[in-house]
Length: 443
Image 1 (cartoon, helix red, strand yellow):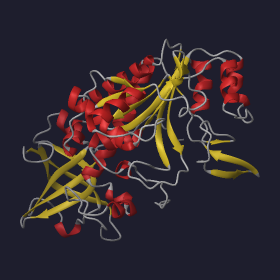
Image 2 (cartoon, rainbow, N blue to C red):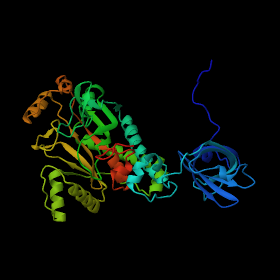
Image 3 (tube, rainbow, N blue to C red):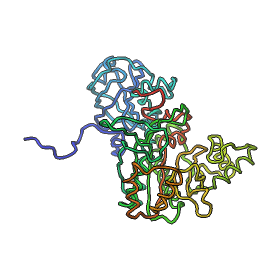
Image 4 (cartoon, rainbow, N blue to C red):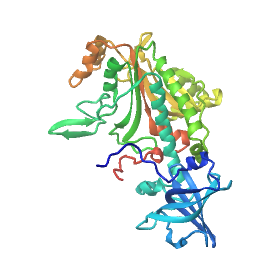
């Protein structure tokens, strides 16, 4: 009887293993996909694409025991050869190939020139050929950094005593309300795709005190802008026993500091590929909603039209103002009007027309919405009633408050928006693996 005892050790080595073991002059085995072939006659450079980056291998006539014609772009191969220190190579060394084993071959030519540093093609072409376009080193680096952001979120919050939860995306009622819902039939019953995990993460504060989740959320909004998606990834947390909503902003600041340090330490190659310098996070200014509007109106001679929310242009100008005057990449805008805020947002006792809430703007783009929640059952019912809402469908949510909840609050971060602005893209689809918008359901 055969048994499995654990991870199987492989003879093939990864880039970091060759680099760390000082194997110059030694024979090694490597595998990867053929990214590009540069034929120089008696010598050819075969560049392999591996999970850690590009690896330069050298085919030499009379040394390598196979014909160069046997190797095709996009084939996957295994090479055996000698490690040779070469500072001009992508990793500082190359493999002088002795033998080759072809693992697979492409059935058709590549639809895009992924080996180019920048692909000279449209976003539509990249999205239509997504599984191929992401093989480009620069395209792939965007999602390596996105992984780093998610990893930073998880690792930091684990270190702060948070418990990771996974809440359902199918439900009977939305936490946000409104008409922008994807409705569907669930075994002959009406259901919706959740706009956020808000209800569930608040309920779980009564269980774990501090919870977080990374997962998809759905917005059935008929927009077609460069900053909106109908499905995106939200980084959510909710924390109990807070003294004020500033505790939440402080926790997010800590996450950003931890994550930018992580990117600089462990994703330096990807930052370099994309030419990115991480933003300042040592201190983040905060400004009241009404004050921010007045500051922008005064400095840029702009009259604002919506007294209850920030228009995209106002967000941009607030970011510009705080960058110019304070050198700040991020700014917290606090105390949004109660009229704009959801029913569970806690009103400011000093002025109930405003809430203890905030948005975080990153270089003029909103990436976070958060705030303190109402934790008293009777206050929550009164707010629901004052808004003319019904409690039908919220019984389980309200039960948590009926049986006692601590002061708490939380936030949701748009992962794709944060990534988009970090790397300087103008369209959120550039940093979404498989975007879903008004016109796209495939691939």
